[in-house]
Length: 404
Image 1 (cartoon, rainbow, N blue to C red):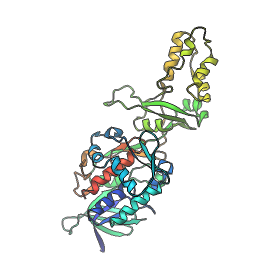
Image 2: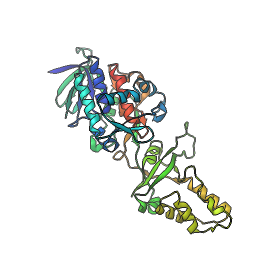
Image 3: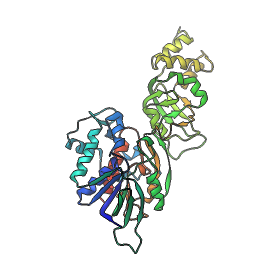
Image 4: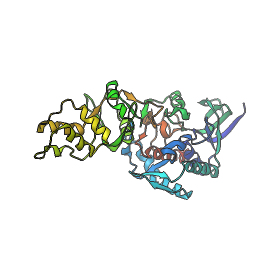
């Protein structure tokens, strides 16, 4: 059997895989980077509306979901947003802060892909696209080193270290598969059940009838996923961003954020007028307390169509002081129980993945199989919307690249 030998084989030529490959290559390691797609960095190209939200200035471990909330700290400290900015500036890429610390390329996301390709080239990384991995295994005791054999459609390759950077299940049309999870389980790893994260939420049937004709209406809210009938060990955070009503449910940054924390059957709560009292004018002396004035007050903080619809959804228009107070409270606590999310097809990332209890937080190496590493989205570390998942990809990749 004709086997080609390398020090490191990286499976997956996305953000994490390419970063890890050139980080290892810089250390003089012979690196082979494999991807089943026909080109590298496909998900990078569609990210951030085609401009790639490549990091977030405010990245902290608290911006990530994981069964072990402390796991990401080591990698994030090793490669920070400032380090990524330095790399971007080294390649002359112009960028800007859009909002909330989110950094985007001024022009195409292709600039980030080109950066990664150039760094891989300069580090001597051998990149092969359109290669399907059939099987990966450890050599048995009778076989000579190195440790791993990777059987592919382009032949067999051997290496001392294998890095799994195959991503999650989100956006299958871009080539996402469960291969990384299957490989991890083959090597004895535990899987935290993958689920769609940063995904639009779907209305229950009764809410669809009430709201979906307002598709396209958008406004600022404070959103939070609420626990139902039990107390979570950690209260889900609130997000103050835009909500968008769609033809099937709700989306927009606020909704995508809370979707990562939402559990089936539980409610999601939206404050439609964050930090504002809306109906105080109805309590003023000689104020007309009627539907017209209610809608006028609502239009001051909501788009007209939403204001008019909201007024008609109140079960009873009670114009007493107590009734107006109840309407005010309802504005700050619009509660929905979604039927579900839009699933992996519309999810920006996958929550869950390889159990971090079985990985070394400093190196991303398997505690079960020496020489096997997991980085990026395939690991049970999921960031908020806004560049956090890219920063995790870079940071976990550097941790592994400096160790393989």
